[in-house]
Image (cartoon, rainbow, N blue to C red):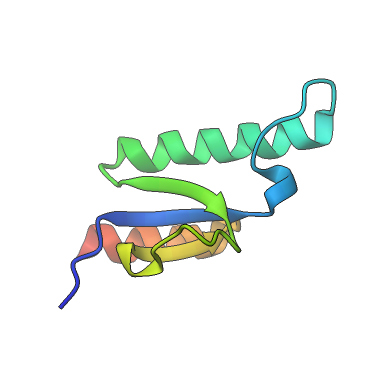
Length: 83
């Protein structure tokens, strides 16, 4: 049985993978993902961020893959920390 090395993979689109200076919308997406990553890591979780269609990603290496929706992430976090 595979033992995934990543607890949560945050998914985004290719165009949102890197912030673009001077574009407040894209900078905000990147900032929110950074804040979320730090919060999850502070709970001892290993977090990875990539685009949803990343051909290099080994999806068997992650327990949860979510788009940045706080409700879903909260549920995943609860399940990881309760177990």
